[in-house]
Length: 578
Image (cartoon, rainbow, N blue to C red; front, side, top):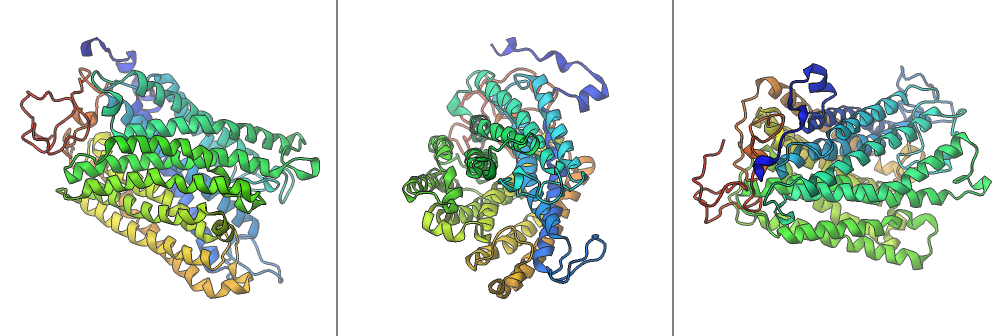
């Protein structure tokens, strides 16, 4: 059976352009997704520092930005409309152009065929079209910075009526291009989702049943389902929003009989499942890493799988907690409060399973393990603070304050950045055939962990003190002036957090050429990707493997070592790691 599965025809030498640029190899496509995501991470991070500088020193005008405040205005390094653009584009970039390309596009594409024992994705050409559609989307978004009127400035959620008509000057093409860029990106990930689902269902190696799948594959599969089921209403809303801007319709404009709150329902019906679309793969990376470096089977494999499915289903029933202050009838707010608090239960089960996996394990602390533990630690804070947002009476007070900013950074930063870095450090040897430098990796972790908390934990106090989101000058409000030292402290922490990423950049690039060559299985892990050379050849496997067990059989009495690869028969003599 395994011998009958042949490589795709594109295994032949195809030249430079077809091999490295217009490639249909899932591993090359994964690297292209990773490059796009890392590029936008730099852009989005720099925008965050402009925002933080403005909030720390809003009474200081900086020459060279081309604006002079009027006598009645407090100054700042950028004018108010530019600040709105910075806030909008930072959120848009980090959610849609960093988290999704890295966690879904890069690691989904790289790992799914390797972890299920397939030679490639089910539809290689569709996969290539997906990444180049994302590249086109990125180009459109990049152009939007330079059109007259500047980029979109209505917030990353694009609430009408601000987004449905010109805010400052004429027809703002920045907002139009924002809509087009997101539509193209959604098309890209719809194509990717079709590949993820079809490949996982139809191309698993012999013996690889659903409950022998690595948890990373369950997380990617669930994320793809959530995205494909939730994105339709927002695509319809984006078309209506573009028609309001260009064709004079009034779907969302109240003066024409439209309903601005309709957009919020359409956006958040997609937006809250989207939180889990980008969070689940980051948690999946940590769930892969924890048993490897604690040398224990994962605790509660099936409860984790069932909890992931339950969280996915519940994610479609919580969207309106983003709209508690909108005048919603309390009789409707209560059910959404219940579902919002209820969705914390499956994630609590996953967190407890992660902690139980560590209990009495033979724990080692290489860089991937440190970032996996950072994911767990930071996510716990984000989850606990989310309970306040699920309660309608509490949320009405803290909604649109910096309490919410702190909460969603603790929730999403844990999965996107800590989980993303854990995945990069862990699978870098398999992806590029080189080991990353451990000392630089640990410096990167500790600087990221310490200064992340220095930046975002004080925001809980800002929010409790009443500081609103999306304001350019807190000094205009007397009751916020006592909080200004915290804003300065946060900005200093943000600068140090930025500097903390430099060891990663140096490590990533230096290791490509000078890193120690990686063995096929440097971590002594069980899953199928570690049975291939580092990096894997074009068609991944010489012979499609046959799976004999689950992915987390560490310290098994049936094996003389503390690892037991999925494809090793019980009676076979174990090979050494590497």
